[in-house]
Structure formats: C-alpha cells, structure tokens
Length: 319
Image (cartoon, rainbow, N blue to C red):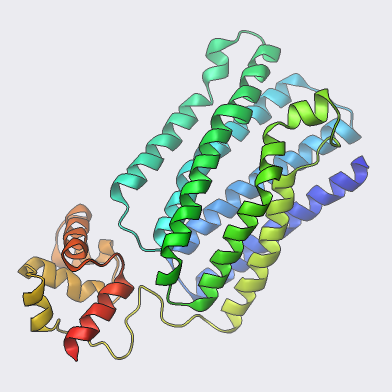
C-alpha cells in the first residue's frame, strides 16, 4: 500500500511540473498578469506536494522518523499556507480585473500575519514534540479556518463575476474549478485532521492526501485547457479592445454624461486600449496609485466594474 501511495505522490508531482511547463508556454503566447499569479499558485502547490512525497518516502520506505526534519516540514507548510493566503485572492482579482485595493491589502496583511505565526511554535514551546503539537494545532485549526475563509471568498467572487468574463472557455475553466473545490471540501477537512485519522486512529493509510488528489485532477484539467489555448488563443479578453471600438477619442456624450475630468478622460483613453495601470502612470507621469484612483472614480461614476463593461458602455454612446 505504501508503495502505491508513494507512486501516487510521484504522479502528482509530475503533473505539477508538467502543468507549470504548459502554463509557461501559454504565458509566452498570451501574456497576462493573471498567468503570473497562477504560476505562483502552481509553484507553491508543487512545493507542498514535493514535501508530501518526501515525507511518505522517509516515513514509510526509509522508516526515518527524524523529529527535526518533521519540525522543519511543519514550518515550511505554515509558510506555504501564508503565501496561499495572498496569491489566491490576487489571482482571482487579476482574473476579473477588480480594482481590489483594500482587499489586496487585507489579504497581504493576512499573509504577513500567517508568516509571522509560523514562528509561534518556537516561542510557546521549548522542545520539539511540544513544538510539533503547536504546529499541528495551527495547521489543523487556525490556518485551516483561514484557508476555508479564503476559498469561500473566491468561490462567491467567482459566482458573482462569472458572467463578466469575455472568453467562454475561461468561464468553463473557472466553473470547473469551483465545482472541484466544492466536491473536495470533505477531503480537505480530512487532510486538516490527518494526524488523528492517519497516525492516532489509523482510519486512513498514512500519506494519503486528498489535497494531492485535488492537485492531480486540477493539473490534468489545467493541461487540457492550456493546450487548447496554445493551439487556439482566446478571443478578445477584458484587457483588449474590440475591433469596433476606436479608443483614440472617447465620445463627448460619454464624457459629459458621467462628468469625467480631463485627467480621468486621459486615463480612460489609455485604459480601453489595454494599457496597464503602471504603463498609464509612466505615460502621463503620475504615480500608479493616482491612476488607480482615477480608474476607481470612473468605475464608480459609470457603474462599471471592469474594462469589458466600460468598453461596452462606450460603444453605446458611439451609436
């Protein structure tokens, strides 16, 4: 059984590497900020799977129960969780092109707090067994609750924003991801209580990880969809301007209707061309934060939440 579980983890690790390679190829063909966040997510998860693989090999095959290595692994897991708290929300904010200033700050703060929390075991416990007890508590209770909260946030955000995605293939990918997350929730709960289920009560084989299984299925779907993106790039995304829109000048009626200031108008001309906030800031010689404020103000005035809605609204004023 242990050899089969080890083989399973090797397969999960291999799928992670393959998925990263494919996404890198996609990023070379379709450059998007969201893909960089996705690569960060895959990288974090692949490190997690690698540690699981080494642990199964060390405990089950080599019969090595070095407590120092176990402590190091526990600390690494805490750090990986802290990174996930920031990367996952950032990925979905970039995917939906949400100006999530305060939300990004909130999740970044959560990640920093979690990172600092990874050192708590060294301050509240004096010996390695006690430190491992603290780590298991943090992973199984505290950090797990935060993970569930982040997952619920991105699921709700995805459901609310799903219809605003331009490419139907991206909508299909996202819907598949949401369904997968919901289906695997019981497995995530089991993984959070792995010590009781696998070590203490022996209800599950040691090393069995539903999170790893989730990652394997995720990567299979990721490679499948990414292959289609390589063969046939997606149509106009929310960062690109439809051919029917001439961004050279905004309609005067549009500017008057929403009382755009000269600076907001200047920013909007560049925004609808697909220019990033950083590039806009460089073009008009202001800070990125200033550009974000102009974009946020314009979205508030127009009732839009992303570039697609803004472009569609501009088209109405051209007719």
